[in-house]
Image (cartoon, rainbow, N blue to C red; front, side, top):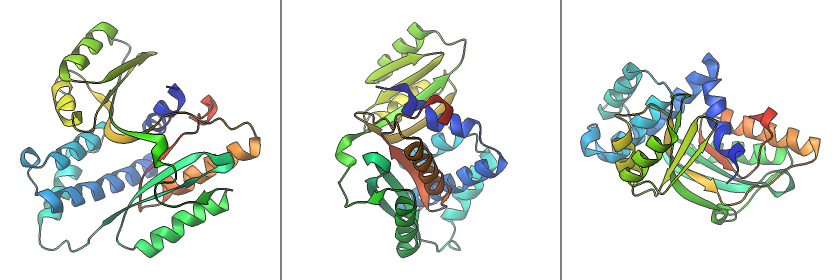
Amino acid sequence: MSGHSKWSTIKRKKGANDAQRAKIFTKIAREIIVAVKAGGPDPENNSSLKDVIAKARSNNMPNDNINRTIKKAAGDNDTTDYETITYEGYGPSGVAVIVNTLTDNRNRTAADVRHAFDKFGGNMGQSGCVSFMFDRKGVIVIEGDELDEDDVTMDALDAGADDIDFEDGIAEITTTPEDFSAVREALESKYTFSTAEIRMVPQTMAELTSEDDIKNMSRMLEMLEDNDDVQDVYHNWDMPDDED
């Protein structure tokens, strides 16, 4: 699999400014709220919450923020109900795009997502139009110059990982969604994660050669990711290095 798609989101997060970090924390807080309301505030008895907390920590979200959000979601005063809606469509030149949202107003969110597709030469399609081109996988990324490839590989395989890709001091470990929590828990005592989440991984990558297409695809992704209702944007664009 191409490395560009895998590392691009991580690089953007690690280079995020304060405003971007605040937006990332707000999005993760919504996931925490949904997980608490669905399964309770105790991560030991709520695997979904435990996974979201791991995602929050890999994004350097302070523990105070995490605990405060859990407490708020568990209280009777928080009456906001978020709905999970996934949109699918195509970017410029047919790049496949999946947009996961958590919203308290589906009409607003649908209009905003459609606008982003339309504005930059894409089009929003029907449910299922591109998701068959992706696989749902657990993804754990570990970075560090001191990483030993053999040790990480052995630890990951022993924990039940499906695959390990080691490149330039970065280890990407993939699991089935079902095994993700167990693998993450087995590794988190030994390693610090750059990311740890279940995500949609493209089966094949698409290249853009037109400068206009590259510019429009970048702007479309920026508009989608800047939307407070959008949790994750997955695509199969093999982004050039200077876009990462």
